[in-house]
Length: 231
Length: 287
Image (cartoon, rainbow over all chains, first blue to last red; front, side, top):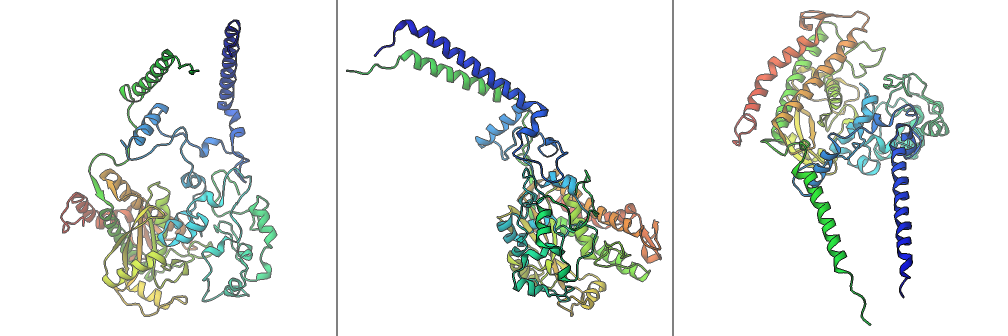
């Protein structure tokens, strides 16, 4: 059935107006989104413990080149005319951005160590070669990895001269993996002495609170403070 | 009843529109293109990563010999101490050779050059340095042949090499044999005590990249030495830091003096290997 011919121009006018309104709303939304003040609203979630004062661009750095160069390079890559892909807009956030603030001269579990070939299990099960596997950002927490993750690498632990009153091998046999962090600060960055009695270990609830962003049972004095002084 | 055929004029219009958009995009991207972004190693001649690893291992061997003999062994005779817990505030000591290497390896990470350097053994003092998995298999061959092993670790996308770590000084043997936590106490001079493992994400690099890698490693050595100098300043009796070496008494050389001596010993070999970096002859120094 045919529409009456007299309605066609009116329909086109409404359609055009809808397009214009849609375009205006789109441009306004884009402009608002690009304002620096809106940056935090665009984040996937709240900043992790100690990161609230950081600007988005402290981690999400601008990728090299102009937008046009990036588009050109991406097309060349898709056409197999260049070897490496490029980032568009902002570069991928990786360990380098974390290490910029958290580099330490001494670390009992430095992230680069997990790129040694033999740590394949830690990489497969935990993704231990990447900072964000344990410290997933925009969660509002300090640590997002389970407190019992030590089980992946330390199942064969047996100390020749065990300094603890309960042998480590006994704790391993009893699968008490929630006690590890009660004595051991994972990165070893707190100025403190490791307990030698198991009953002096911090309770698992204190550790859980700490990982979630609560107070540190290990104390506040750091061997190597971060660039911003965050705990 | 026949369905009305779509107006041919509209189809032609859409084809023309899309052709125009593609033409503009092609002009935007290719005809009036800006300078292309750098594409890593896509142009120019490249050096296989095995050759790079050999250069790095030789550099490392040189600095380890310098550290072990001229700082640790000579220093011990002059009253210096070296300890595995050297970083603790209440320990007035410097790093043992394995820990000096770790200092350098950690410092390399700050350079953004994606070079990995690790030290391990089948009889390590620290259990965390025990080889396992693919490294344990390759180390068996290193121990049997005394030659380096090259392999690819696909899960990390790293090309890797293991070079024998030899007991170059009597101190290596005595320290490991006498250490209360040592699992092996019959080491002899020139034994293969372990291996250094080197990792890099590419199978070949440009000459410029090779120079960057060597530079990063050397900056790691310098940073390791800086850490030791900083520690000596906290000693109850700080040594004099200057031109003189521990073999002359209670002295330590400055970073410049230490690195100058390292470069004197290492650079001839490294430059020779660089000059032969593009050789295909397996007997050339770069091989």
